[in-house]
Image 1 (tube, rainbow, N blue to C red):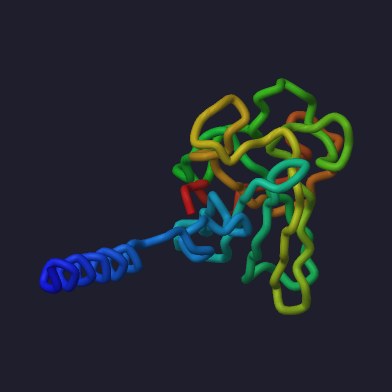
Image 2 (cartoon, rainbow, N blue to C red; image 1 turned 180 degrees about the vertical axis):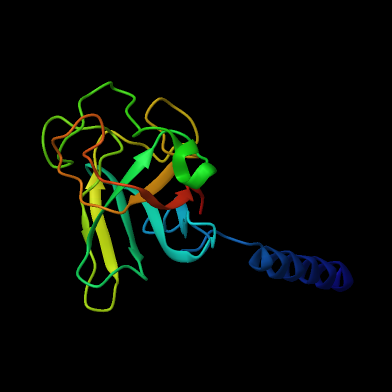
Length: 184
């Protein structure tokens, strides 16, 4: 009887020890909502393919946060950046096509009522040639598919300022850099 009680106690202790070893969800194993979902490495289109920055996208209340930095710009220069419809940087960025515009709206100020889904604010470089973006864009999605998804589309940096008025693209100048939007 004593031997049976000892064996039962040993089995119970072993079972408890093994159950303590099972993995349980922790804060570290749960995806961090602050982490970007999509990213883009921005490279020059002049043939040198120089990496000039990174852009990131993540869902937030009110839309998708587009954030990141560009470097190597002319100090004090203001440039335009847009999301374009095709995820290709070939032919000096021309293969990216026009602005991403799934709702067939007119080009405009990204903070106004009428604008393309791909319209973003102009960026102004600081004294070191660095420009930052931190903007929440409505009407786009970081989903892997869907009409308003920006996955596998392209960021284009233009050499000039977007006037937010000229159609169809704001008269922003040459395409000086490009990056395909990929999974983070």
